Amino acid sequence: MADKDNKHEHCCSEQHNHKELIETVSMDMPEEEVLYDLAELFKVFGDTTRIKILYTLFESEMCVCDIAEVLNMTQSAISHQLKVLKQAKLVKNRRDGKQIIYSLDDGHIANIITMGIEHIME
Amino acid sequence: MADKDNKHEHCCSEQHNHKELIETVSMDMPEEEVLYDLAELFKVFGDTTRIKILYTLFESEMCVCDIAEVLNMTQSAISHQLKVLKQAKLVKNRRDGKQIIYSLDDGHIANIITMGIEHIME
DNA sequence: TAAATGTATGAACAATCATTCATATATTTA
DNA sequence: TAAATATATGAATGATTGTTCATACATTTA
Image 1 (tube, rainbow over the protein chains, first blue to last red):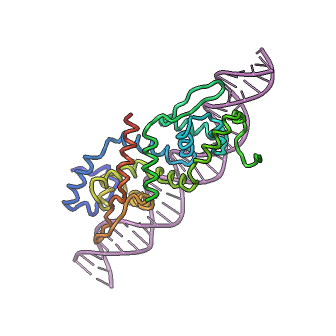
Image 2 (cartoon, each protein chain N blue to C red):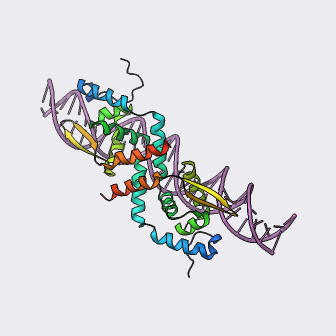
Image 3 (spheres, chains in turn orange, purple, brown, blue):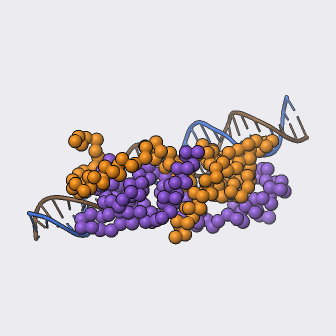
């Protein structure tokens, strides 16, 4: 069995019982693309500003300037983060005159955040 | 009403109906510490290597070296990430002779990941 | 007790990221 | 149509982060 490309140094895994386990676990590992997308999604939740924006929109749709006021941050900073949230399909927007109104774009958001809360409150 | 410390520039929020909404939303915003902890938790999920480790341990407890072999990464890299996962109380460990065996330390992990999967599969 | 094995960790480095600043775009108002 | 308003965006910067490398620590084995 070829061993090139392996970055790990062989150690305990030389033992037979471990080898079998490693093969089983490796086979059940989801595709690289799924794992990447999953990490990218959680990365979006991994910022205080974005979490606050989601909490804000959880109560009501809102224009960019109002979100900035609630979070006491610049319009530019909020706008940049809204772009990230939109790319992750967590928020959507619509134009209303001069304003762009943002709102949540996914029913899972509340569940994901709730699960997170439950963990940190353990 | 004093306006210092506000980073945003007043714009649409001068209107009365927006002011009321902003106050309501601001009041319902969770404490800063909770929002910070929540973002920190999701940040831990926001890395492919750590997601893979969690998936691995989802099937079976495992020693550091075996995890490194499954992910085809160095023992050092895995060890560093296991430390992050442990600080977030997502994994726990125990010693077994020369080896340290890691396992999942929270029932919510699967739920959080499942919610994430459901979103990216939308 | 000395050597071997398995894991942890500090420092360094490259890469990523959030915010700021200046400015562009789009819509409404005068 | 010109000015005002609301939002978006590119570049720059400081901060954070994941991996590597070298090495330290802990346990077992000879």
